[in-house]
Image (cartoon, rainbow, N blue to C red; front, side, top):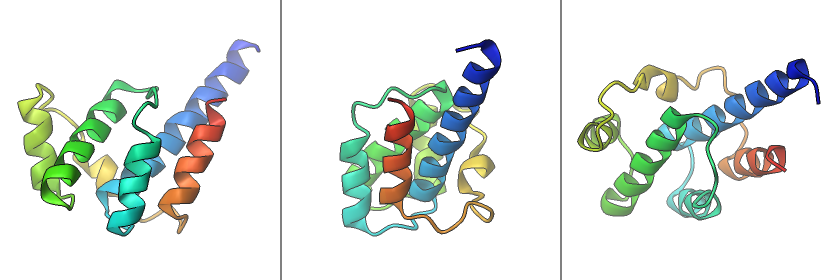
Length: 113
């Protein structure tokens, strides 16, 4: 694969990661679907460190609170040493389409193969 193809693939994966995280943060999925998404992504190697930090925080907040909120996520990432997460990126899902969390997770996992 040449550099251009690698950059394109990396960009596509980053967009899919962000789509998954936006769906999680916007809580557009029911609790069962979110639980399943967290389980499927538990061993996933995130391409971008911020994505990994956001996912870890969302997992912890969801497990302890049963829901996700900006305030809880920001507090969790700050406690973990990452106070500078650009939260609007993760909560701006207006142009993200209507794909389900299951579809987004499946597409992300397929793209890493």
